[in-house]
Length: 134
Image 1 (cartoon, helix red, strand yellow):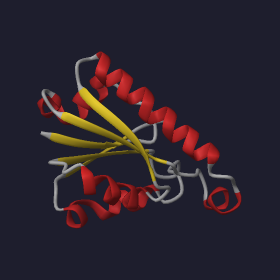
Image 2 (image 1 turned 60 degrees about the vertical axis):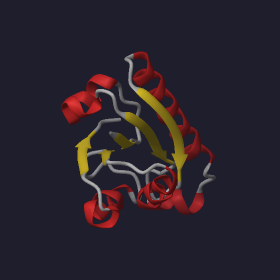
Image 3 (image 1 turned 90 degrees about the vertical axis):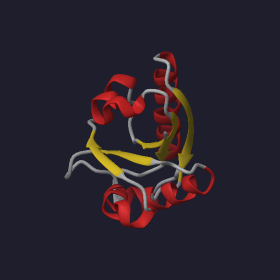
Image 4 (image 1 turned 45 degrees about the vertical axis):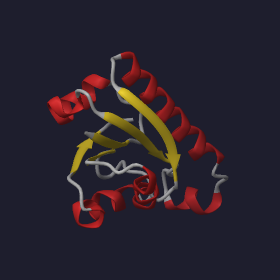
């Protein structure tokens, strides 16, 4: 099983297991953290360095936590538009399932909801969505 885990915040193996159950065991995981901005205004006027640094932290921390708990994981930072970041990742990582963690509605980063809306029809693989807090 190849899992593409899209997350804006660090997660651990227990949280991933609570979302997917036994599918995590023996899975090859690619952690993708899109470099999203918290608002449309921040997207247009800010330097992307902050968003990239936050995404780098989220993917690095998640990979470390997963590896510590025996989950085979690698990570990468993606584009600021999550749906495009997923498209890019799927070019080299042929996922059997995509897990998208997002902030609750009203607290989502700019464009974060686009990846949720794209879903299975866009990527032709099962997509699981779960909420995560900051």
